[in-house]
Image 1: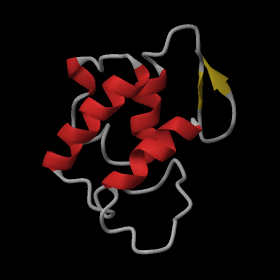
Image 2: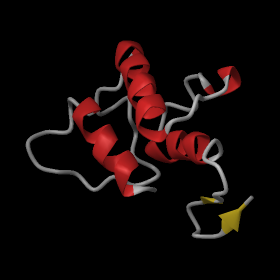
Image 3: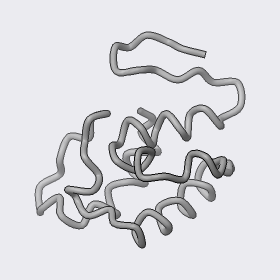
Image 4: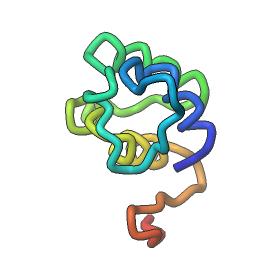
Length: 92
């Protein structure tokens, strides 16, 4: 996951506690406080930061369930970049 993404994501994790948590692809965003209203605000921040627009079919609960799912949706929209899966393999 891109460092810009994890930096952007941290303020939206209102239940993460006072210590900085290690964000992994499996980090459950709902458990850490990303509800439907937070997801909308996060979406706007993502679109502004990365200069992309997530397709309508990516605007669902599964996409916003984990940090990895959300990053994959973002990375798929970035020009000339491949996404890295949990295994480190590069996929188109």
